[in-house]
Length: 327
Length: 283
Image (cartoon, rainbow over all chains, first blue to last red; front, side, top):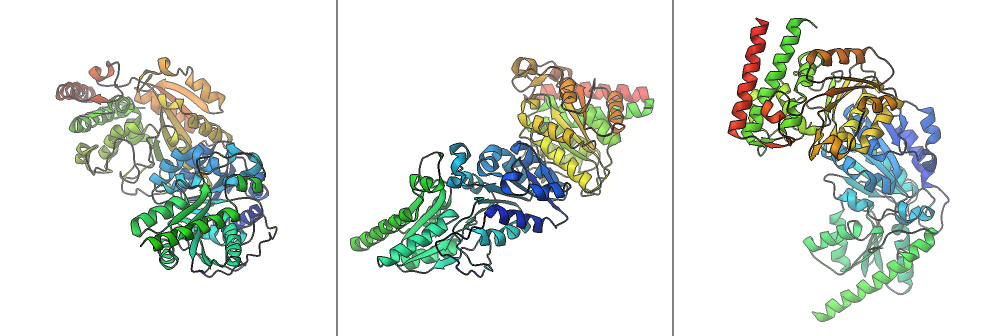
């Protein structure tokens, strides 16, 4: 793992769907590769490649349960399938099929769930999964990955594809604020440290990594120095790095584009509860369904902005100080 | 089919039923009805038509069997044991702690089981995926799929049926065990689905309907399927839930039954008498 920071606070205009289509074409050279999609190839930019590779790409129609089962059958025949659809349909819609036909049956499958959380924006609440990671986390042996930017997606997707078992990867299709400089490399299960500080540690994933870096800049101007970890691998979680930074800074904040139940916030809370608690604040969706609107509105609506992360850091630092004063 | 072949397969079906009853008796309860109804199909497949080799479980070009009605596991285990996939004495471990023979089929536990099934409908998609994968790999084997009639309630069955027809998966030979009963009672009272062959035909499948307790009729239907290119094949087996054991077949509710000693003894006596009769006929 060698990461270099590419965060500038400005978008580079690189759509993640284009990265996905490019990586798909590259891993598609594997003779055992096969790609299934539930009538969303045009949305994710893979339709041209699929039409050019009729023996490697299959449009399943709007039939996600069947897609997961057919993928399991293809895996049983010796292929390494990858399936794609929007996050809610890649998780809620076909959970029993993923659980039994794939995971319980010991089949290898890479599942792409696009437009997680508020990135579903104008498709609205019906298409806005805040619980997809929770569902996949509950599956024994599953790997759950939340992508922060294009560089990370390009590096991590081939690693995940080659890994055995069930892998769930979520990312939005549109351009995002870059976090990493090109050439960064990652290990599944290791959380890169993007910034080191003394007062608190932010453990973020996906969309909230860039927001957390923005929050860290603002907090630095107030004299608060924070560490930012990118827990892009929600499962297996890099407990070693998180506990080490919990020990050094004595205060943690999690930040995710997901329900606080079952996702990164839960995973870190469970870790702390079992291995040594410290004050924890969780930024994430609380007891709410999605709704329609522009992404910036939705981030404010659900408390997923840099300001929300910064507020959580201020709270957790006060709690830490209160705990210290109480001793 | 020669007379000798027909008698041999009928005897094999009775042996499958005997071992099924014995294994369910050892546990005391089990899915007897829907296991007994597919015994004749399993006799034709494992006794004659399948291109398999118990010594080469991972042979890629083998025919594959997906028993999507996973609760018929006990009959399938009996057929596999009788074909030499594992020792017959494993059958008494059905559903015992640590067993390799669970209530519903699990390919990670049982030699010869190609696909894990039990959540109904899912085996149809996995069988379709297997058939597609085998074709893409250039293999000339077939995939055989067994579906329950109650299982046809599951929407996933019809998603998979569309896909199989669209991709002309003629290496897929499917059977519906049309015994007319699901867990809670007669299929016609719960969620009626008349004209199953017509429905599959409308989805683009080759569809046949045969007496599912007649080994020769089953054999003929499968050979008809083999001779038809460009479409997946559905063979609707008209069966009786609990077939071969009068007392079980006559129960109104026989999806999952308690196998008392008295019931097992009566069943085994009836099956032994049938086996004797067939052997005398053979001689």
